[in-house]
Image (cartoon, rainbow, N blue to C red; front, side, top):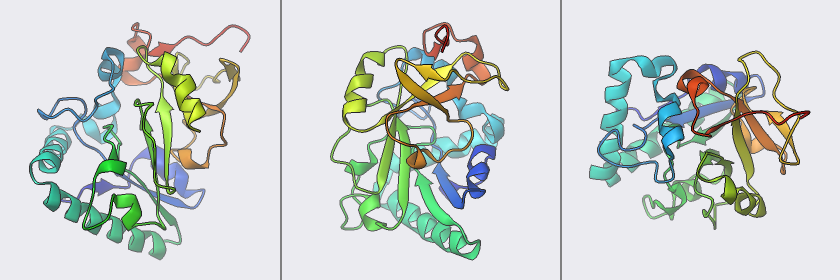
Length: 234
């Protein structure tokens, strides 16, 4: 079973900037029977984009559940396939004149820096020339490989941890209640806001910014505090 995909609208926007994004989508939260989102809030789970795009199809959901169970029940086999997929992605990127980048937590929040593979401390160490990037709700992730960039994902339960993320050099992603085509606020909590919907290339973001995301799907109806109302005059 192939693990990585490179075919959603947002990642394709990154190709215009010269990057091929390879993303792993697992079954989020405890949907598979295994919890892959230990920092998820109620608002996050309710607003998850797991069923967006091709995720709306039962075959895709079934495949994500199988992948997740494979990760927990046959870790060596799963990691061997992940290595093969990254190697194939690198070759594909080279043929297309693009640079390969990998996002392993498309719909999960696993501490990949702590998952060994084939004699290496983690998959990033095995592929030092490849950039890896993810969102995370776990502000205490530290000792990251130099080729792994994290963006802290703010939710209704962890906003107080944003300063910890800032201190560790992570930008903070915030979901705002603005329309699909509306402008994001220019500032939030004293920091400039950049448009995180423009592409998925978070490792290119300047440090010290808020990554603004527009509420989509079920998040449009969120009232938990996961989605943030833009501040007046921002």
